[in-house]
Image 1 (cartoon, helix red, strand yellow):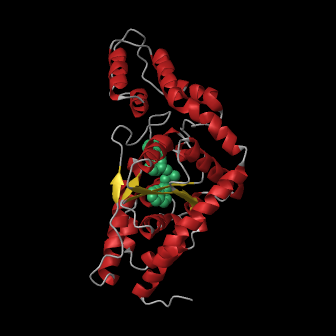
Image 2 (tube, protein in one colour):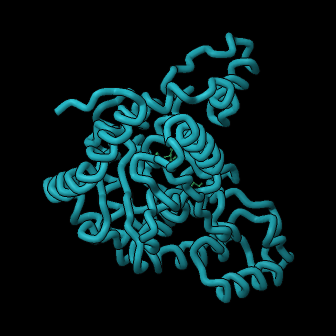
Image 3 (tube, rainbow, N blue to C red):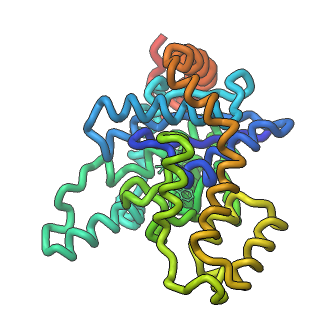
Amino acid sequence: NTRVLTGITTSGTPHLGNYAGAIRPSVQASNLPEVDAFYFMADYHALIKCDDPQRIARSRLEIAATWIAAGLDPDKVTFYRQSDIPEIPELCWMLTCVTAKGLMNRAHAYKASVDQNIARQAEPDDGITMGLFSYPILMAADILLFNAHRVPVGRDQIQHLEMTRDIAQRFNNLYGQGTDLFVLPEVQIDDDVATLPGLDGRKMSKSYDNTIPLFEGGSKALRSAVKRIVTDSLEPGQPKDADGSHLYMLYRAFATPAESRIFREQLQAGLGWGDAKELLSDRIEQDLAPMRDRYADLMAHPERIEDILQVGAAKARALSRPFMARLREAVGLRTAV
Ligand code: TYM
């Protein structure tokens, strides 16, 4: 069977980018035959950028409810909270010991923070924690502990997957003794989504405050956010460049190819941006509206989600515990009995 695994950081409210980049493809993958799916709330990762305990707990609930509302079947999927799996930070340490510092120096998120510091003439590492610096190693531990073959993510995670493969290869070479301890994972990216733009055209991201919320605030919040998407100033009647427009990119992430073609022709024929936004909202709503009631219902019953996550943690640990014993032995640590 193919193992598919992905996680979402619990530091914010799920947005359209999370949905199209990770939630939707992961739910689809979990419904395929011969797939074992592992999906989790990355709350250890959340500690890197969020020191508000309530926000982390709230976000974890929202993400879990979103996944289930989007069709994830907890009986078929191993669905868990990262912090319920102590083998993840344990493996993270083993991997840290074989990862070159130079590899981490090249990580986009770390480099972006250094560049910002330099731009404002601060010390290059000002405010940068070891958590941020070694973030990709924690992610490698998530993936390698369950020997995932495929990882559905948005384009912003490609580098992390490359680093995961690097680290896995190094570990295999050092400790595999001819057999591979770790599977080298493949990234899975939906070309129609890749990087979903936010309201201002940059990548939709909590850190840019340019997101369109998925369920929070209901259809009203979604429609009012769509109205705020930045466009050029062409008037109705003037032909629009569909391929250069963020609105069209968002539309494509939800519509069928045939629907997208029609939308594109309408824009080229001079459809006004106001009307285009209405059509975009309608198309997104068509997909999301049926999930919204389920989401609200789950959010009203956190204890149900807690039960599901407890079962998921037990399923995950049934695999991670014996595998960790094998890894401990491979590196020369004694396994406690
Ligand atoms: P995170 O929480 O930032 O995002 C979760 C998922 O949503 C995708 N995504 C997007 N996709 C398309 N367009 C966008 N604008 C957009 N914004 C976010 C992300 O690519 C991601 O797939 N490090 C990860 C979480 C993680 C993980 C893992 C993922 C931890 N361990 C192991 C896979 C495997 C992160 O911070 O994603």
